Structures are given as C-alpha cells and as structure tokens.
Image (cartoon, rainbow, N blue to C red; front, side):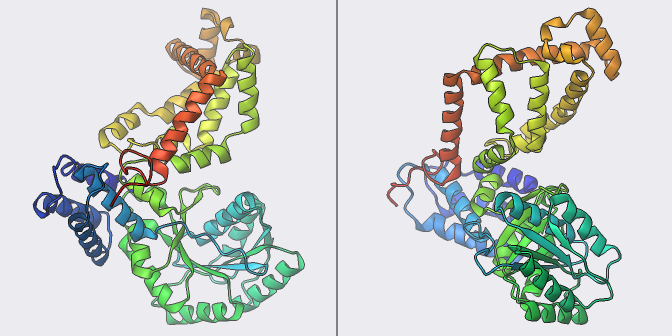
Length: 468
C-alpha cells in the first residue's frame, strides 16, 4: 500500500531539502509535485486542495525549529498534516459498554465483510482476550451464512446459526439473547451487501440499526476502489451513524487514496486495515505510523509489536541458550528461523517496515533477488536432509550433497549455496546469542523506535524541547 505515493512524494521532497530557507518560490514546484502525487494516488480533489493549502500556510507561517534545516522542517510539516488528515491517533473499538457489545458491519457487496467479521473475531480473541460470537443477517446472498460459519470456526469464534427465511431484525435480536446467556463479550453482526442507491436495502439496515442499537457500526470498504471508497463511506454515514471504517484489501492497493480521503470526507476514523487474505491479516490503523511509511521512514513500532506478537519466544529462547552454551546453529535452527520470518509476512513484509526501504531502486533490486523464492528453495533443501544431517552440518560431504540435491530436484550448486548461507547465519546468530551482542541489537532497535516512532528524539524531527 502507498508504494506509488511514497515514491512520488519522497522524490518531490528531495527538491526542497537543500534549501536555505522556506519561501513561496522554492516550495512552489514541490507543492505542485505533492499535489500531483496525491491526485494520482486517487485522493479526493477537495481533500488534496485543503492539504496543500495547510502545508503551504504552515511552511510560510512558522518559525523553523532551530535543530532542523528548512528542508527537514518542510518534511515534518508534510508528515504532521498527513497524520492530521488521517485522524491523529488510532481510535480503538468501544469495548467498555455492557456486554455483549454489538458490532454491526455494513458495506457494499464484495467489500469483504464476512472475512472481516472473522478477522475481527480473531483480533478481539487474541489481542483483547474477549469471548466473541458471530451471526449472519445476510439472508440474500447464497451461502453467506455458511461462509460466516466456516470462517468463524477457523478463528475459534462461536457462530450463532440463522436461516434465510428469517428477518434480519429477528436474527440479531435472537443472537443478542444467546450472547447474553453464554456471557459473550462481543457479538459481531455480518449484514448483507447493499448499494447506497438501493432505498429498500438502506431502509432495511436503518431499521436493523434502530432495533438493535449496536455499540459500534463499522463501514467495511474495499481500499482498491480509491476515491469511491470515501464517497460510498459518506453516503452510508449519511444514512447510518457510523462509528468507524475498516479498509479491506489494502495489500492490493498501491495508491492509498482511500486511506487519505475517508477520514477527511466522512469525519469518521479508520479503525482497522485488512492487509491480506489470511484471517490474522487485520491491523489497527495508526495515522502517524502510516504517515511515516508514506514518507519512506518505515514503521519500526509496528515491526517491534509484530515481532513481540508473532515470534515464538520459547523456541527463540531455547535456541539462544543452546548457542550461549557453545551449541551449534544447525539446519533445523535455520529452518525454524525461516518459519518465524514467514509468520512476519515473509522477507518483504519485514523489510517494508524498515526505514529507507521505500526507495524504488532498492525495492526493485530486492524484488529481482526474489528473497521469498530463495527461502522456499532453502527450505526444500533442508527438508530433503535426514534428521541426523539437519542436526549435524559437519556431516555434509559430496555424496550426501548429491543425494540431497536429487531429493529436492536441484543442483548440488544450490546445496553448496545453502551451506554457505548457513555458515554466515551461524556466525551472526552466535553473535546475537552472546548477551553483549543481544544488548547491542536491542539498543539499536530502541534507538530506531525513538527516531521513527514518536515524533521526538530523531534527527528528522528534532527533540521535543525545540523552540518553535
């Protein structure tokens, strides 16, 4: 997401970073480039105009922070205005209401409401430790009820059966009673897809909302529809008292116009981003972190949180202790490292959140290297080894290499390449397993957090005590 916008904006902002001072003349061309970048990203024209006007006003009307060059100050202004446009801070769900908290999902057909219901269930169960139940009030789409049952079972949410012959209001009222009896914390209601121009369908969801009075009414919208996402969100917001928006399919949207327009047009916060097809691919929307990613600063905070959440700490600690005691980093350990990386969304998912990785040439070079494909190759080679060979790398000899290569359908050269990679990784892992080496790594991550995470402490933003 935002790849196109990031490339254009970072290139545009380079033009002003060497300026001695910010004047209307030397920011005019940059503002024009920023304007074009936003429009090409499918940001709504009124939103773009307002954004450019505010950046210009800030750039020409403020006293530049003493620690920043004028160019850096201009980048900071763009960062701050992007953050404001998207809503300042993450707004979480209101889960403090009397249980069961009813969360109603509304949206167009094909926006991904049913999958989002399952993703949200998993998020609430795993990260909020809530007991979640789901129910489908979609009595129109064939197999809609069955689909919700299937995905609910996959994420461990309790599904409340419904029937296409029932009325949506009756379905939800019955579900609320069942949720009370079973002491559920949250009830997620999946509704039928509808067009805002379909008066009968809109009247139906208005009546449903009035009858069940949900705590949260979330509009689920496909990010790839761009500016139309913001317009349809506004139409639904005019009909329903929305409390927030969930953008789906953001992994397939290189422009990001929807994320930048929805809040400005509807006044409603984006609460979550659907980042892929997997049922764990739902992330809270943090405007400041998104602004940093758009400007090529990475998203170290989200990366650290993801590592904390997805890495198997028990396995990692067990391996670290083994290495500290002088044990070898073997092929089984290497395979485990690949598995951990896959949990993080693969190599590209990891690198995407690191500062400086938005450079188009660098991205292209990484993609051409096909890291995911290389990792799969190495996994295949390791899986062709015997258990004894995996645990004892020193056993590798020409005949074993030949047998392993034949077993995975590759050349011996690929096996040799893996052995070389393993030796390099073993050296690095031993360094990190050493307490002083691990300390250095953690201090490095900590400094990255301060630099890119909170708007203070880093060279780009100066420090919080700067005089304005």
